Image (cartoon, rainbow, N blue to C red; front, side, top):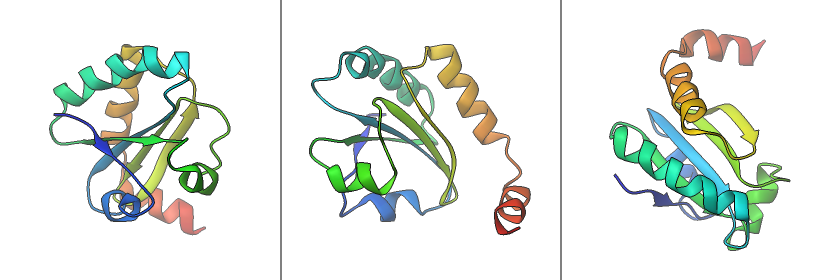
Length: 117
């Protein structure tokens, strides 16, 4: 599966649905972003049930500001419309796979309860 490009116009529609959306905040000039891209693409190819998306922070500065992106790459995981993980830095493939498995294993009823309290 290839990645989806997120913009200010389509971000909420994609991110607020059911299921998992992984988001890579990146920029073309960023060396670590370029090194992380193939890792991210390989995971996208392995997990057809997950939306893998990318936000070009140069093209979408409002989205970067909205989510407080101060360092790129930043990886964000959204499940059922809730941000459940966000961390800057390029991660190795094993760490990305671990994040995906942890996000899959979340009890979203418990996550929502905790967010409300």
